[in-house]
Length: 265
Image 1: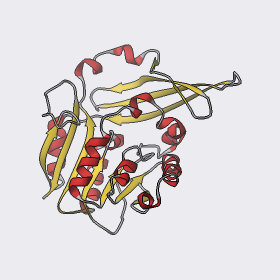
Image 2: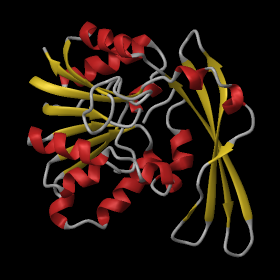
Image 3: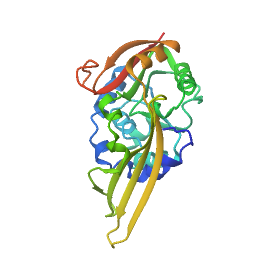
């Protein structure tokens, strides 16, 4: 993942990431595994993080390369890979890099950017640079998949999220620590389509000690036709726009997801 400050925010979150209930139960993994199987590999996943999506693709027998800016997230991914069978490890390659400017000296039939990673690019120029770089790593006729959130107008108009951090379901780490994560929108810029998110992790150790970690990251949201236009500017033809990981059409539910499949023209 990428943000304007580099990677320290996600380094802070890395040890908790795979245990967060909302991430653990996301229904997107099967969607990306099916895409990878259909492409036949090799696949490039940009913003691979801890390997939440990447490792199941390797387990499905598809060669995959992961790229991420956060060394902390990549280290978690490497540790998880060490627990996988040798045949899975052999299918996975990891690279530390910035999605706006990386060079792998190979091309892929499928490039994916799961779970909002593209939305850490805060300017149109950065978005275009990233698309240009990813297009250069696609085979002719290859596909790029962007997984964005569809901006909810009621959510953007609701200022409750800007007050006290709102708690999520708690979880327990393997070492017995109990964790509650809370989220708050620290700042919104409706004209620039950006928001700064505050994440608070409240940790209780088995011996009674408590800790509190606070991190922040920035996001820029895109609306459907803005995203389509951006892809077309950088030489892609939009093939499909889905509203969920079951491939239901965009708009079938609100706000749903904003998942774009685009072909290298």
